[in-house]
Image (cartoon, rainbow, N blue to C red; front, side, top):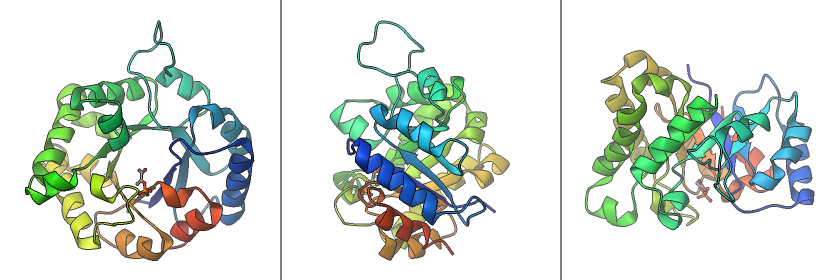
Length: 250
Ligand code: PEP
């Protein structure tokens, strides 16, 4: 049985006050032996504060991206080993904002996935189609291509340590959520594809849904057989909203 993971991507939001209040609220509202795992993805400047507040607790944290190089002349960038050093367990790779705004190609994403594993981080690989691609019936082809880029570089065995997040681009930050059936269909497609490579790894892999998850729609999404949690943006920015999603896990 895969344990639900409720993960919060704070994007470029936050302040010292907000981080303290939010993490204190999450610690108070969740339990170590709780029904779900929880992780947060603060902006880089707040990782140190997150490490201090969450140290020894049941809430995990991670970086929102990483540079594929281990060190060197890459001004402004952060390596996987630096994230590991800060206590990160996870790192997001291939978030649609990184792909669309910062031009990360499928191969760039695969290189980041590899670098994450080399730094002993668990990559959370984000995949998903745009509205135009969905309307053209290309959802599975796009997700397939995004997954293949990673599998071709690192092999299926690397997915033992990974999490996948299916995030349809048209549902991110728009208030429009994929219906539970729409999401389940793509999650099942992903798991079936990976099962063809390794039944056990695919069976254990957590596949999160992301795209306007809220307290009001989380329970129905998490009830789907191939949805193992959520990657949450906007609704992870206050303890009240994020805990409403955590509490939707039955
Ligand atoms: C995200 O940023 O990954 C996300 C899913 O955002 P939102 O929940 O706001 O749609």
